[in-house]
Image (cartoon, rainbow, N blue to C red; front, top):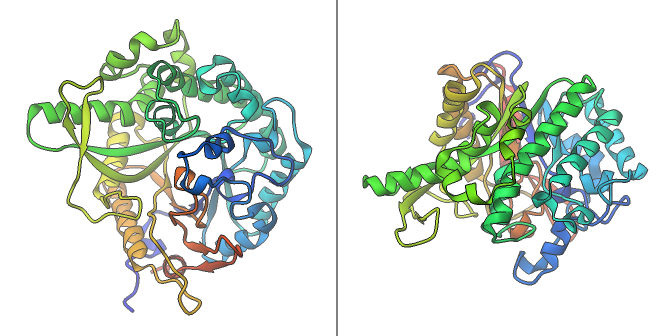
Length: 445
C-alpha cells in the first residue's frame, strides 16, 4: 500500500487534527434525564425520517464515552469537536438537570486526560420540546433562553474547553427546517423561515454577549457552505446560482461580519422579517475569535421562471457522488477558505469544523475497507493546505464524523464515520480510513 499523501509537517506548527460529533446523534437521548427535543416529535411523524428512527439510543455514547475517547487518542488526534445537548442540560429549556451537566463535566475531563482539546458547540439542533411548543426559533424569546443555557453550561465546563461555538449550521436550523421542511420542526412557511433566519443569529449574538461578559475566551460560530455554480453560461442561471449563494453562503456570514443581509434574500424574506430586525444587527455583528467552516459538496443551479421566489432548481453535475448523493468537489473547500479570508474575516483563525462523506460501509472478516473515504479525506486535506498556501489562516481540520451515527432524516441509513458502528450490538470497528489517518498523523516528515 502506498503511503498516505499527508504528514503533520506539511501543515503549520500547531495545526489541529480532530473529529466531530453531535450530542443527539451519538449520546442516546433516553439516558441521563435528558428531556424531549423537537427531533423526537419530528421523527415520530410518519414520512419524516427513514424508518421513523430517532436518537433515543443512538450510539450510546452516554455510557461508552470513555472507549470512544480512547479511539480518538489512538488515532493520534489532537482535538474533539463535541456538542452539549440543550435538552440534556435543561430538559424543559429552563431548569437545570444536574445529571446531564455532570455528564459533560466528566466528558471534558476525559478529553483532557487523553490530550484532546475540547471544542464545544452549544447548539447542534436539539431544541427542547418545551421551547418548540412556544414557537421555537420563530419566537424571539427562544434567543434569550439560549443565552441562559449558554451561561449555565459555561459556568460548569468553560474553564476547561479550548473554544466555544454558539450555533452549528444556522442554515440548517432555519432554512432547511422551516422553508424546505426536511429537518425538525419540518415547516414549509416563508414567514417562519424569515424569523428563524434572523433569530438564530440573534441567539448567537446574545450568547456571545453573555459569555464575553463572563470572561469566556475563544468564541466562534460554525457555518456551513455549499459551492453554488450556474448550470449553464446563461445569465439567468448565473443569477439563480447567485440567489442560492446569497441564501446559503452569504446571509449568515454577512450578518455577522457586515451587520447586513443580502438584498437578493431580503427580496423574498423582507416582508416576513420580524419588526425592527435592523436594531439587532450590532449585537449579531459582535467580533468573534474564530470561524468554523463546514463543507461537503457543490450544487449546480438553474433559473426556474414562473415559480415562486427563489425561482431556482438543481441540475445534476458530473462528479462522483457520496452515499448522500452529494458530488465530491474538494475545490469548493479551498474556494471557501480563501473567499472567507479575503472577503469577510481577514486573518481571523478559521477551522474546518466538518468535512466528510457517507458511504455504505460493511464489516467483512472483522474489517471495514473504505478506500473511497480515504481519498475523500486526503483530497480535502490537500485543498485545505492549498488554501493555507494562498494565505488563509486555517488552524485545524475536524473530520465528520468519528462514529457512524443517527444521520437526522436519514436515520441510521447513512454512514459518515471513521469508526463503523453496528446499530444492533453497538460494536465499534475502526475503518481503513481511521487507520490511514492515524498513520498519517504519526508521520512527521
